[in-house]
Length: 376
Image 1 (cartoon, rainbow, N blue to C red):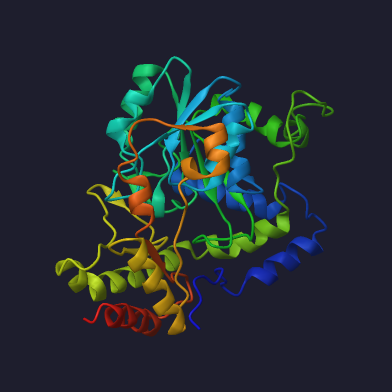
Image 2 (cartoon, rainbow, N blue to C red):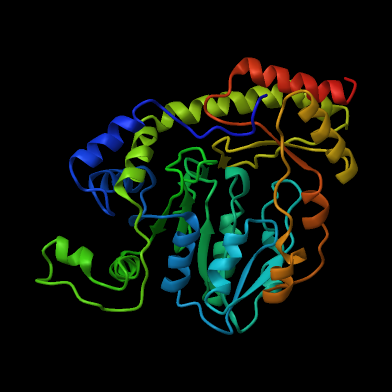
């Protein structure tokens, strides 16, 4: 069976975890946490990176820093993971869902401004599959209406928009290091902060509402309870696992891109014949090969394709059920405008296996079975 995902593993993970244990410093903000944060800061140019227990928690921190509260509205796509909305629902805000573009599956930047009201607090672009939203237009709207831009870059590390790393373009950005992502610590994430004026507050919120970070830097003589907050720090053992992959980030990225390109080349004839659709990478966007998906004609065809692949020992999957159609989405949010593409396109997507240890031979086999299904 070719599984859908295997968490990335380089061989140094256990060695680094052992080092963390031997140093008897396995709680948050140990040596490996700092190494990972500094690597991200240097690689992306963000003002500050704070490693977190998940991308969910990174987004929650961004919601707190943006002072999102009851009665506020946050504009986002419905085609996303639940955490995108939950971070703001927990603050009493209303997710306002906007339709997506059928080419990239990202929020349609041309529909955002019409959804802005006097209660709108932020725009939350989700960079699906590590392919950037149209950020120039989104930033233009945000500036015109004095809104925060919080990037859900859960899938976007190593991707760029016009040369700018995803997660660093808006006010705040959130990465994920879940086991399904290009680089993993099992569960984990990172908050990227563009403007350093938010850093001290972010540290306090992340450290259970205390100024513990300042204390350990010698800036205060004791640490106190300063504000509300929670515990968003990952264990240094988790960070040690991640560090083994960040050391090889370019190698991992290059291998994934080669697999992605191989999929595309092998399946391009089916797109040329109008049988299925392949991913679109707009000009100015560099992606990270987070996933490779194909689009079947409709839900019925996708269901048959997934079943056929499983019968041939290939575990492919579909992705999000649009949030606005879910019970919680109907309870907490609203869809602005027409759902022209969100539901329709979500029912067509079939994600093929994509992970660091996947081989070229396996990609050839998978593509061959897709062609067999379509009798090509």
